Length: 504
Image (cartoon, rainbow, N blue to C red; front, side):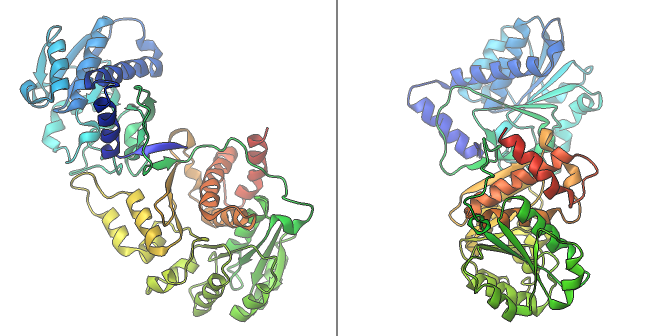
């Protein structure tokens, strides 16, 4: 995995390196500017040879200093470079002011408000970066809106201006730079993978500027596992665990069947679909490798759990918003076994979320989508929905960390930016953007399969947090492997192909 830093964490790492004497601020600025130019020429090879036009907008902080370095380096390649500054040179931080003076020996520095020229070959946004704490007023960007409308190739330095680097949310009046390429430094920032930030950033490149420090409190980006042990854990099916998936009333069983199929495909040695007695006949015509058991409410679940070989449970998909669902959740949680709660098992407690939280334990994973999250954590959801007037704005990472601490278990909040946190504050983000974008995954039942994946891994004794993280990655990987036209039933059947590729 790779760290995802906040602006404050990045500043601390930079300052620690500078104060240690290992590097100066000017050296870091030179490396950053050089990294942007290198990334531009790699991303657009046709710009490597020849004379091109560039417009660089520099802001009032060190991001603007990076812009002056970029201007100087492009000019050295024979480019015609125009530089415009928001603010005045004398107000720049010392390192940025030094680089402004270096550029001034080569070319003019205009005012951003005065820009109104033709669309260049390249537009460089070096206005704000990670330092942005307020929205960009629409009138401030009006002079260069033609750059976007004219289709200029756009590169953002660190973070597209207008985007909060901690949350990915567009601040203020919703005005932000739409970059084709964003070049960040040392580590990616949370705003590159959360909310609107992932789309605003375009293609993301993280350039090494020679810093080695990390941050123990940072969230992590989910990256592909190097291998995944898919063989059974012993000679008997029960050595790989027994997962129980609870199904609902007749006509409501499809969701639980998909969850059960997911649990079986991901390697649980045995999966039993336990459903009301009146739903047995319906389910029997749909399942083969999945075991089937009629269950008479909470009392029936108690009987199932008398079998010490049961190793994990999944409740919620298609279970119904009844009092019986609440009682089944209570019985499952009192067992102390690993449990995945999804869908109706969450929404059933929307009137009294604390009643659910009081029953949860550390071997539980909650898997809400945003609507279900809002039912259990309405205050956190409201903060995410409020307009982000200033930065650092409340982020999805903030919300899920608070939710996990409140619930006392692992929380996985689904979305293109899936965020997973545990009660101690460990947090990972799975970003399904760019090359991992799978919009066809937004289909009915996909979340049920994800719950089944997590339950199957937990049945195999994978810890809750790790099971949620790995399942999120495999879920998207299976969708990418199948491609457009995917329906939820395809996900478990595509999983063997993904697992084979991991272990090739």
